Length: 111
Image 1 (cartoon, rainbow, N blue to C red):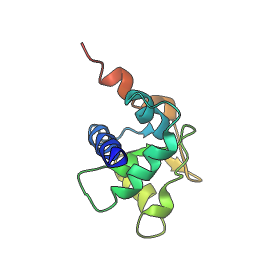
Image 2: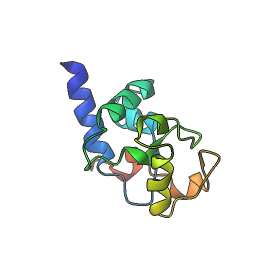
Image 3: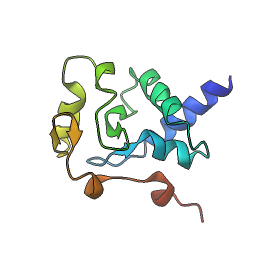
Image 4: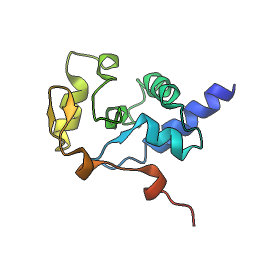
């Protein structure tokens, strides 16, 4: 059940990623106090597949690679979704990552 709770927390953070921005699996893990659990965040994103409220396409690896793209229906859906938000993708990699990167630890600072 702890895994299910973690996945729910991941999904809640993912829902907050702004349109046209991306974050990384590791950034979500760090925000949740689980640094080193990027792979677990990836599993959580994979489990979110059918929920349209969870923008899983906005979560990429730390280098901006679309490593989760094979979990989307169709051959290029993840890239198409990102491009529809104005995100440039070339060879399965986000361009201008430093400009569009959203870090939940900074954006969601607790006062």
